[in-house]
Image 1 (tube, helix red, strand yellow):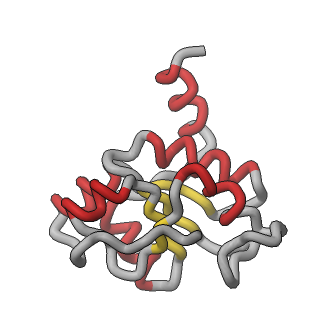
Image 2 (image 1 turned 90 degrees about the horizontal axis):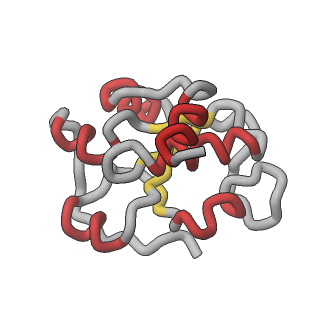
Amino acid sequence: MSAEEMLAQAREHLVRVDPEQAEALRTDGALVVDIRPFANRLAEGEIPGSVVVERIVLEWRLDPHGEHRLPGLTEDTPVVILCNEGYASSLAARDARALGLRNATDLIGGFRAWHAAGLPVIAGGTPAVP
């Protein structure tokens, strides 16, 4: 299977959100998870209130039953995962759903689409959740 086929397969099971929908979810209390590398967050900024989780530990932080999960995370927590342009985040959202997060999805176009839509951005550089 190619990477493109894997991506298409992952997206078949997601109800992806555009920047405006993601902002509405964020405003309503959804967990916004930023998996972008530090250099991108530092250079481009971050979404206010987002939680930075490095991709390498994402499954441990998003396992709703795991001892290393993010505080307050449950199977019903709405989660929007974002990367730079919305590719890696689709794979991450697929994995989050496999862990039992029923309401996990990703941001179409990633952070760059969010920024282009003129939505709130703060200076970047937040450390990742250990």
